[in-house]
Image (tube, rainbow, N blue to C red):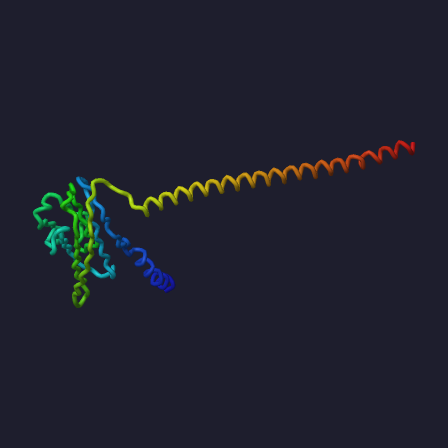
Length: 221
């Protein structure tokens, strides 16, 4: 009876340990500055709010050139099958999002061999179907990325300042460590010298006392 009670108490713990782990999803904004003749990643992440609910999703991309008024179909990724709709991007788009799953959360794509004509606004639309036990619920989310194509990569002022501050912090920390080391060394050295002086003083104080009894004995004789 006692063994059966112990097995019943431990059974939920075994189930808890066997539960699968789920990866975290973080929505990060896409880069917006592309370099001509190089590859550029258009980022689009849409995290599922209810991670425990099964779902399917597909992604559609649209493009509006800098001199255009309307968006046109650019790219789609449905059930693991990519499709390029805009002839200007044939053989230049590559899927860079979630793989081996229909529950997409990353819908990023890569533009190969970027040209100046790729400057414009890109829109990513996620369409997701959440599958509950008794019904299905459809959601939609979109992200817009304004891309500028430049001849070569240019660093922003914020990036430069952050790097300068990082080096200043590192140098300041090293200087502080050196000052602390010198201070501790001097403090330990002073304590050692004080201990030596006290030991010498005690030795000198004890030495005359050790001679007095001998002198007294000699006088008595």
